[in-house]
Image 1: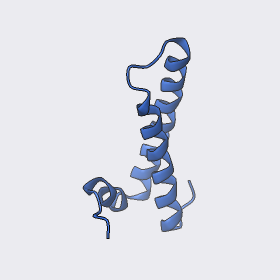
Image 2 (image 1 turned 30 degrees about the vertical axis):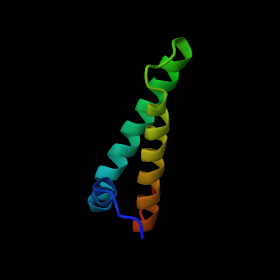
Image 3 (image 1 turned 120 degrees about the vertical axis):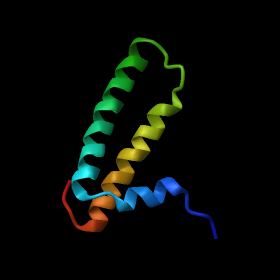
Length: 69
């Protein structure tokens, strides 16, 4: 059985409002990263993937809690 990361546990402890704030912030950050990547290559292109996963994680937990995004 795989060990849970501390980061995964923290996501489930957030309230719906905090999750929505992270979701909105993540979407803005993703937009900025994609824009910067279009104009010039990013130093760390994996950051886009990490932000997308954070957005998906927030949406998943909101749906598990039964709260609409």
